[in-house]
Length: 114
Image 1: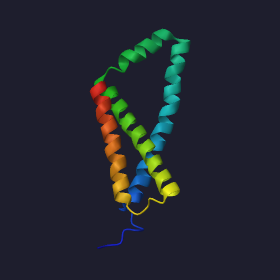
Image 2: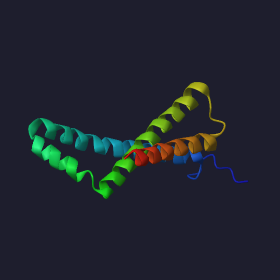
Image 3: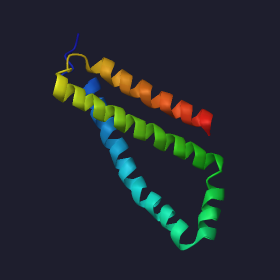
Image 4: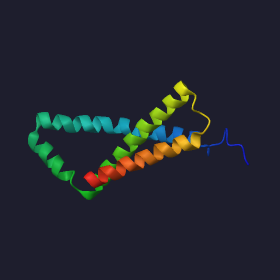
């Protein structure tokens, strides 16, 4: 069996990439979110128009992706804390699988609720 300790296919590396990408997407979303909130204070009619736009299917899909990324970032952060605080580094594959499963489950529940 090939040693994947320093390989880019190692589950820990893939979790690292997922955590960075989800964090970047959340950081890019934050200014947009703050702008939309400011619409409520500045121009309620534009805010209502924006809310009408958010009922489009593509926007709902984007919201679901954002929720999945937020859940992945949360679960990935908990994975990092478990590794650092409790020395749970012996089985990255199970931790990464738990992160992905949690993220997808949150996304499915969000889609059902929307």
